[in-house]
Length: 190
Image (cartoon, rainbow, N blue to C red; front, side, top):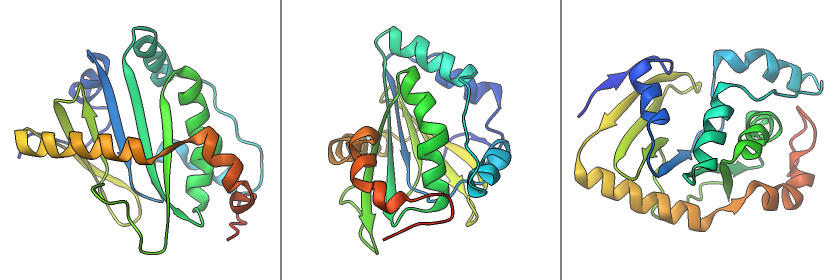
C-alpha cells in the first residue's frame, strides 16, 4: 500500500496531473458522486433548469496536455437506465472536458451485467505507471485516493484500461442512441 490522500485538492495529488508526460486514463464506475462543488448545479439540473459550466483551471490543464499531444481518456461504466447524476454528468461535466481535449467514453450495462476484465472500482492511471485507486462511500462521497505502487497492480489496471477503452463508445456516439432513455431531469425512462 502506498500513500493516501483524503483531499482532492491536496497539492501532491494535483501535481501528479500537471506533471504528465504521456497522459491519463480515468475509470468511473459509480452511478452517483457526491461532490460538494457540484451540489448547486445538480440541484438545478434536477429542478429542470438549464445547467451550463464555464471552463475552469481543470479544463485549461486538459487543453495544455491535449495540445502537447498527451492522451487524456475517461471511461464511465453506466448502468441503464442511467441515474439522474449520470445524466447530469453527461450534460454538465463531460462537455467542457471534451471541448478541452479529453476523450470521454461510455460502456452501458443493464441489470447485474459488468464488462469482463473491467474493475468495479474507480481509478486514475497516470502515464501508464502511476495508479491511484479512488475510494468512495455508499453515497458517492469521496473518502480517499490510495497510491498503489505494486507493479502487478499497475500492469493489471493498465490492461483493464485498454480493455475498457476498447469496449466503450464515445459520448457523442452514446447520446443519440440513449436519448430516449435519458429523458429530462427526474424522468429516467427505460
